[in-house]
Image: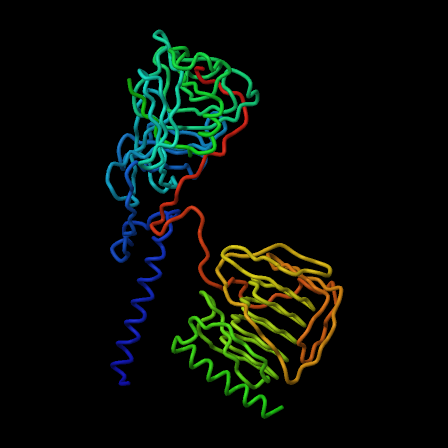
Length: 257
Length: 245
């Protein structure tokens, strides 16, 4: 091998090594992106994932807070949400993502678990961990029916009790924010209660809480199929138990009439 | 002995050459008894140990097949489908064994995966390894510490040592250290020049090698190749809800 060839080989090997080290810096989803000035020499993470029909993206908080901004790149957050949340659960969000493939962005648009209903904001992706979720839930207030899907396949369909006319269950697109395993499973809430990102439009507080809409069991199963609640969605205790063992935090809940 | 060393070296180099050519990818297990200077055709299958390299390796009465070793000193050692780094062994018979940073004396292992800076003296471990777990099949004796390990090691066929082999009996020994390997039995076999067997209490103090687990693959729970994991059912917190009811 001539000296020139050896030199070329050495330069090539060094280049590959540098590129490899740089690429590794972007292969883990839990790392901060490199500073801008370095990105000219570094490949961005180009890995993508197809999002199957019915799947959604859930974001889990990674730190003790998540700063929410009005727009990407804004300097001052409009909200700082604590993790864990007020009920002691992991702070999660439903990512507002409509594209068919997931590519890790710098900023993500999130549906927020706070009033007003349907509130959204932006957060740095580096503060979050992202997961895909095959489950979703639909609530039909008129038919008094809840249906849960895994992908395209319905896995549960149940009769429910919903809000009365004076305390209606709000329609819209929400998500599950927490799961509480109820200390008194024979009570009003049954054995399990999901919290959602939906809030009553007429009750600003209820039972010491902020008027948050829940999905839970019941000790009055004979009332299912009617407008009976203060806004919450009630279903049979075996059904809520099944959902509690199945649904991840962040599962989308669409409430329609 | 010199002749054995030379023949052993020749076998080692030959096997290394085969490994370098990728020949050792998936051999069926068919080990037969062999002299220390004779290579068997027993290789690990699955994802572990497909090539054979030896660096800084001193061997006496040693038969090795499908073996990757670095900084390895062995006496009276028969290994099949074995990947070792920073490993000092005396009187050691191993089949389908993946070890890193492991110091062993009078140790017989079959189809197990051992990891990370362990010191084992006078132990016998028999088991199988499937993805993510190590199952110890036969354990008798004194101590079992933990289970291991990720990675998929499928190997473990047959290994037999003949030649300069004596049989040493060891009882009352200890296996320890970090995350390792269960299985202590009271018998050590296939020891050419076994020393230090049965000296419980000294284990867990030595550490050699990198402490980095070898072995292949395994499955990462909840993650896809894209870096986007899959959400699992909520764990829930215990309490009293304050929803609208």
